[in-house]
Length: 181
Image (tube, rainbow, N blue to C red; front, side, top):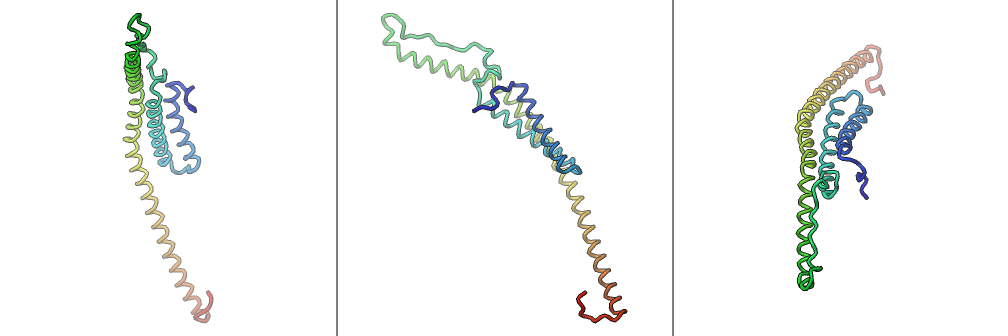
């Protein structure tokens, strides 16, 4: 079952963008404070959708959406209907049909290849954009992790200072040394 059979070439191109925007919107909804991750996810989704669309085009070469139906199809003549020698030329019909099918398949491939390469080129550009976005997301994560580590270290230091102060207060008040607090 081919769920994309009714979709035109323009809609297939639009679906790659729709997938990217939906992914970015979902990630922004889930993590509104991380637009860098939403942009990275959108680029990755666009790249994956573009590669998928290119593979879809190459798997459906005979489809007229890619422009293969604009050229005339080869239809070999039948030699079996030739008077007198038709029976002797019957094996040649199979050879001619096979050759015509091969040429027709090549015409379909030649028509679909530029469309598929457009999708693969778009995926390549998305990959090129993904690298700086990934580095930016990594740098943002590193800065946030360092800030959290510094805050955690400050809190540990504050807790240690408060415990020492509590010990001084306990000694001053006269609490037993091995009390539960």
